[in-house]
Image (cartoon, rainbow, N blue to C red; front, top):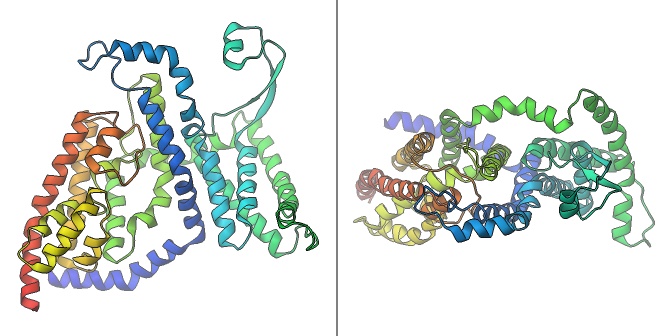
Length: 444
């Protein structure tokens, strides 16, 4: 076993660490991660609003049934859900601007103008606008306050998670065009006497024209087939999204994240840029089902990993922190006590680097094994309906059991499962902590 771990450690240092470091510093992946980070506050608030207007108090067969809530939602739900529609419902707008802003800054271009360029590119491909006649219909008048005449209508079907892949691809292409034209001095430069904000905005004139020339024929051709570009791209990625909502896919994500952490790299930060479009797309599907009163379909959605796997942070290290706080070794006991409170809020750097877990072959076994066990148990619990599926986003610093309760629309089973997994992780980590104690004693 020791020989295997030595070989694995050497392989990690020689091959995985350089590759992971390059991925962590890759400009497009960094921009992708930043785009979702910038959008996250809006998505969390929007999810919370959706949760409030869909609380499990409307089923007459349930002991939680509340007539006052049913009456309140009947009167006001249509208005109160609006913040959800302009946050989660248009998330691709936020993400496209964020990607453009981040990638432009990394290329030493103007971030604001780059963000607007990517937003323009996304709207060009994903939000067809037309004028439609408005009949003198009472429902139309009540909703739009328009009594007849013509009204501009934008197709918003692909502004939510359905447009994420289009937003990502389009943003990358737009900024690369911007960078190329700026490098080749194919942009309009105004005299130094012109205010900087105006000068920077005029730089975009030629990139905008270039994007129109490139995109318009593609748009026309795709629309002639009866589709829009986001639909075409979503159909292309459909097999990947479908395959991602499976236990093997979840375990693969966990394996990559924790091997990177073992090498001393922030595994979640490296992987999150890749998996965010998938888990947010799945979350949007679940939220649409919740709104419609249908069965919630997706398991790997939103904060599934935060609620059931990363309990205390990567490695489910809250259990490790508690086990270390009961250690007979002064060093481990001090680190455990120091790391328990941050661990409640999923901050585990004191444990990761204080124990340490990094490059520690003894603790690496449960550090990888506990999340795999947690994920497997949670997967089947959700799959079989013992606990609810994720329908809402909560901040990643929310303690795991509380996050499980909120994210699943107050599924008590999810809360109990998450608490149980913390306890299980403590019992799994404890014998490895004792082995580690002995190894430290031998070293001293």
